[in-house]
Amino acid sequence: MGMTIGEKIIARAAGVDVVKPNDIHTVTLDRMMSNDGTTHLTVDMYNNKLKHPRIADNKKVVFIMDHNVPAENPKTAEAHKKMRNFAREHDIALYEGQGICHQIMMEDYVCPGELIFGADSHTTTYGALGAFGTGVGCTDFLYAMTTGTSWVMVPETLRFNLHGKLPEGVYARDLILTIIGDIGANGANYKIMEFAGDGAHNLTIDERIVLCNLTVEAGAKAGIVEPDEKVVEYCESHGRQAVHMFKSDEDASFAKVYEYDLSKIKPVVVRPDFVDNFDTLEAVRKEKIKIDEAFVGSCNNGRIEDLRIAAEVVKGRQVHPNVRFLIAPASQAVYIQALEEGIITTLMKAGAMVMNTNCSVCWGSCQGVIGKNEVLISTGTRNFKGRAGDPSSKVYMANAATCAASAVKGYICGPEDL
Image 1 (cartoon, helix red, strand yellow):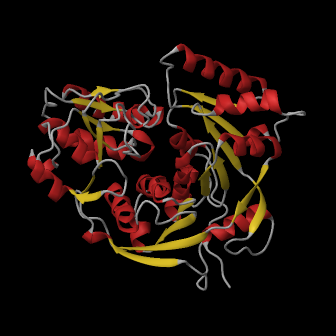
Image 2 (image 1 turned 90 degrees about the horizontal axis):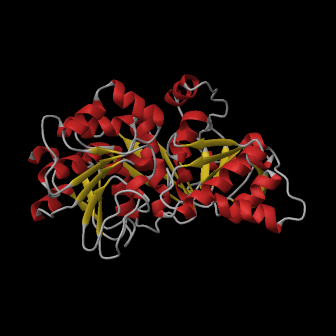
Image 3 (image 1 turned 90 degrees about the vertical axis):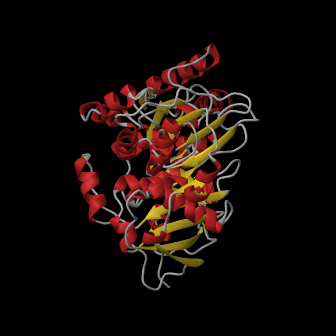
């Protein structure tokens, strides 16, 4: 019996020839990432709970401050201080203010075929380069950091065969939100979502990031796009080599196989308060739902392609006077490129507020928090009740073009409504 991409990655990490779903294996991790959401808790356990604390391999560990950067209150400042001091003491790579953790990992570290633990749920992002990335809690991260190993129960794999190309004005975000709407927020619980077919290979690396990033919102343990020459080119352009280019065997076993014709995907708006509360822009625009804030950013949609789209929509126009339009580039590299292309100037002239590179509104803790009964349309990752502010507020999810157009009109609409 053949193996899927995810099974091959786990087999490599476990040092065995074959694995199958529901097997439990001890694995050696290739990389570990922790951000300022929980690293201070990990540090406290390391210093206070372990009899013989040690870091197994500090070169495999990366700390990234991105959730509350810069610190917005003394409590956060102390958590950051603890994180900085620990990183310096143990010679751990530390990023502060350089970007969102998953974007930094993609730019500087991730390679195909790797098994990576991240103390953040959207670590599934790394599958865009053919890696197995999965989120863990700070206790599991502590064990991984101090031993270099962990255990994994091999998930079943769902195969998504993608065909063709997305239509003009339809984006990878619309595709993954459509898939989640179809299978449900629990439709991939503890499974691998594998994307393949000519449609998957037609997608850019940035678009594949969007797919894999949100697979966790369907409950997936990991999301993986079958790697190809675009992955090789991306890695080489970032100074890395793509070595383990795994593909599923022809006789691999899948829990279920889905077929998607990308030409039939339409712009999506996800209604509050669940990520699978799916609807189409075509239906929602008729309601002219007023918004108070719009956001383009996050680990799902803060890359250069998204900023270009938003700038093109608002170019020569003005943000509605009753709307706050916030932009947060995903990394310094993205920010600098947007500056060089004139994108930031276009956005600011239209009335957008450009934030520093961090999680910003998506995290709902330090920037752009919305008040009672306010409405946000966002390219963020989640729309749970209270995610972006007051529990009575509402978060709609859409692509960058829809968010930008809505910022101009003052209600949820698409670029064609301008």
